Amino acid sequence: MVSLEACMEDDAHGIHEMEADTWDAAEIAAGNDFAEHFMARLSKRDREILELRTQGFKYGEIGEKLGYKNPSGVIKRMQAITQTFLKYEIEQQ
Image 1 (cartoon, rainbow, N blue to C red):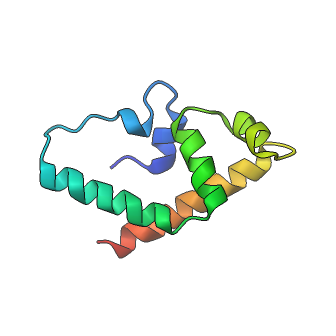
Image 2: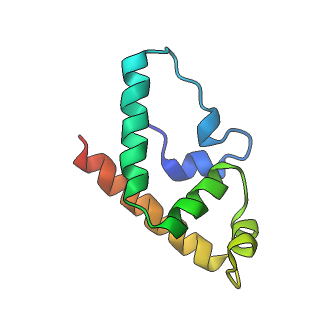
Image 3: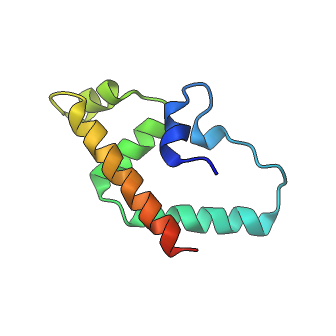
């Protein structure tokens, strides 16, 4: 299993660039459903942060775009997003 944060920290391969071993339509639909329901749990600001992170922006760049004084606020939000993701993942098992 690959963690959400590990995918985002890998500048060479973002989470959206990961290739599936097989292209099963049911698995893809289930994955999309999982992602949509997870994203619905996040605040608008957290969704913005996560989207920018998956686009490859670094914490400081995200902070600048969203008006944070320093990257620590973005880092804290990413930690909270990760915790929300882990909790959601456990609930879905």
